[in-house]
Amino acid sequence: MIISLANIFLIYFIPATFFPTTVDSVMAIQGEWRLQQASIGITAMHLQLLHNNKIVIYDRTDFGASNISLPGNRCRFDPQEKVLKTDCSAHSVLYDPVTNEFRPLTVRTDIWCSSGAVLADGTLVQTGGYNDGDEVIRIISPGDAGNDFCDWVEFPGFLSKRRWYATNQILPDGRVIIIGGRDQFSYEFFLPESILLGKNSEVPSLFDFPFLKETKYRNHEENNLYPFVHLLPDGNLFIFANRRSIVLDYKNNSVVREFQSINGEPRNYPSSGSSVLLPIDENSPVLETEIMVCGGSTSPNAFHAAQRGMFLRASSTCGRLNVSDNDAEVRWRMHEMPMPRVMGDMLILPTGDILIINGASSGSAGWERARDPVTRPLIYQTQRIPDENDGNRFSVMEASPRPRLYHSTALLLIDGRVLVGGSNPHIGYNFSGVEFPTDLSLETFHPPYLATQYDPLRPRIIQVMNNLSYKKPFSLVFFVTNLLKSSGVISIRIIAPPFNTHGFSMNQRMVVLKRGDVSFVSYNTYNISVVGPSTPEIAPPGHYMMFLVHANIPSSGVWVLIQ
Ligand SMILES: *[C@@H]1O[C@H](CO)[C@@H](O)[C@H](O)[C@H]1NC(C)=O
Ligand SMILES: *[C@@H]1O[C@H](CO)[C@@H](O)[C@H](O)[C@H]1NC(C)=O
Ligand SMILES: *[C@@H]1O[C@H](CO)[C@@H](O)[C@H](O)[C@H]1NC(C)=O
Ligand SMILES: *[C@@H]1O[C@H](CO)[C@@H](O)[C@H](O)[C@H]1NC(C)=O
Ligand SMILES: *[C@@H]1O[C@H](CO)[C@@H](O)[C@H](O)[C@H]1NC(C)=O
Ligand SMILES: *[C@@H]1O[C@H](CO)[C@@H](O)[C@H](O)[C@H]1NC(C)=O
Image (cartoon, rainbow, N blue to C red; front, side):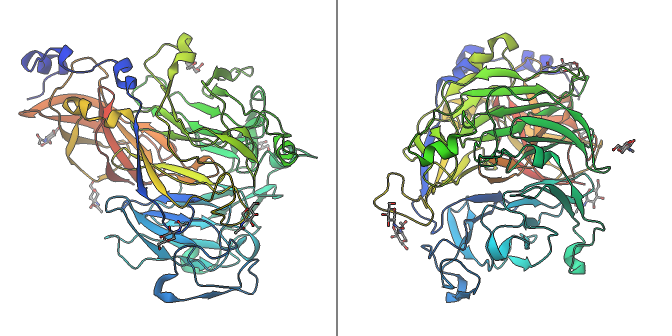
């Protein structure tokens, strides 16, 4: 029997007053923090969630000895190494958020300030780093059953150029584009087949990209590193550096559009704001694409001012740009955050709202360059409130007891929690005699939607195919105690697991899948028809977390493979 939601509600009506139903009441509580590990032995500078729910974490090899030994009590001898030529400690770990356990991994060359992307088959491809690691590509493959022995495999000399502070994006055809890096005004591609061939098989692999030269500030620190890159639904790339943004047709190495500069300050490293591609909704009659950029330093000079002991107040503005608007004059719509923030991370929550977390309210990224940690996250509501209330879209969350400054990280877990780690504003590990000691811990932030008071509204995915095809309908069976009637109260959303470092989550994207009717199955159990994403440009092939959201309360996610 296929019946509409309205009919279901007539049959299973429960007075709405029993349950919190409005956005305000969802936001009234401010989330919760929990310490998961006081020390994982390294500082969580770079994070990637794999589809077996394990998280690859690493810091850098030229840091001195960490607080965890290499697997098998081995030691690494590296004549190129800057600090310890013989280092028996690990600089990468694999963390399991389900069991809250971790084990060391082995990296041989320096992976500091590098970038990464997960291939369609679930393998993490990490690119570049520093010193002897700057032209290395490294992979770690979770294996189907998430085997316990997986470790890094390194491919020296795979990159055409050194890539330190570059940004990666997975492409619709399965390649990875690697853009920029310190003094690298170019981009290159990585082909998955390269691993088998033992060399980079793309010919030519390297393309000039003068935009990054134009956006580098002379006499200042760059302000264009770790450019913000988002794959647009038309297959082109949105690239933001400093204050400028363009659309790059990477297939033709041509800039097809340039937007107005964002108001105010530069936003990339070391000015270090953050950016997201707002959720792409396949239910809207016209596909809309918007980019959001928040925070950063207020001055291109903040990095140098901090060296002189002047910690300039960070930016408190966000800009939203409607990329779908073809008007040449389209401008960034500016919003004021409740507080300033540099080195924040912007994460898309299962609800489609944006979490802004970590960072400082003065100074810039870089060693010893920031003060006044911002321990309270913000949640920015992407939908539901009319545009004129822009300022009211932010809710201030509970404070973490731990400052998370330079080299801190965050990512969304499959159960809706947010993992937070890192913070090391020093040139090495430094645990004493400093205002902000190196932090080796992992915490979780539990957004308000996880509060038990919402359990009556919380859906549970009971059955769904774990492999989806483009445009192909599928059905999803879910359980919920109290199904609400209003239209749009249910959505099915997929999120790509990003590579997070330096305040930016590479490859992060949410697609709200096209949904059809809900039918009643049995007591509190329903069946909803959904359609796979329309194109690989909207959702490149690979593993995604899928959430069902009911009345702004998400289910726990399930992993699906889109191919
Ligand atoms: C290093 O690890 C040990 C346990 O192996 C722990 O007791 C200690 O607190 C750790 N040090 C830091 C700074 O986290
Ligand atoms: C490629 O870019 C050039 C300009 O750089 C342009 O003239 C040409 O039409 C473009 N080709 C395609 C297929 O977009
Ligand atoms: C973005 O631009 C498109 C095309 O002009 C328009 O239909 C849409 O309403 C705009 N969205 C917002 C949020 O301004
Ligand atoms: C930590 O930083 C302080 C202050 O800069 C310095 O005096 C100390 O030597 C550092 N410790 C280590 C282990 O580097
Ligand atoms: C994925 O689904 C298709 C049907 O849509 C099926 O033919 C294929 O075997 C499935 N693959 C896996 C790995 O489950
Ligand atoms: C859900 O609906 C689909 C068709 O839309 C059907 O094939 C499937 O059997 C249904 N599942 C359940 C558990 O009712």
